[in-house]
Length: 203
Image (tube, rainbow, N blue to C red; front, side, top):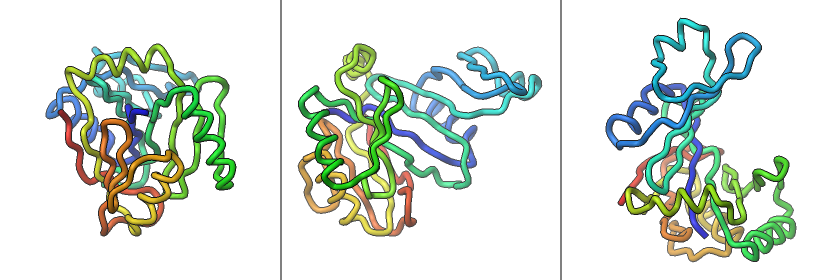
């Protein structure tokens, strides 16, 4: 089991994207959105000024470095909120997690054969994947960078940590849940619903 992805929502997409690119050394995978009624994706090399000139409306920006994939999506919050975490599990753990989710009466959404989303009861969702070649390749790049800790502000840290740990059958200590090699910690003082991104530790 490994956390490899998190999805942020903010009204400061360009500033947040710039932080990952300029300060943290991430690379831009692509920006996805629309020009008029046509879906478009633009890889690195086209500036925001050029995108503005063609009338591009952003849906999300995808960034990547080492074993970490981050998506930034436009939304209403200035401080980025975490919409979901992406976790890869072996086949048995993947099935067991879906069985637990069903027993807990959590909402499960399947998007074709590509992605499975599960509500955590902790204000966010999990994007669950069985073993996939592209994720294996991403994790093998972890020598360059991996996510050691992800901290999120929430209104009820203990409840949210517990909900996440129960769903994944993951170790928990206080308000911290260990997902593979990553410690996910909930800290006090955050909003209801989606938790706020508070801190990241990369190694």
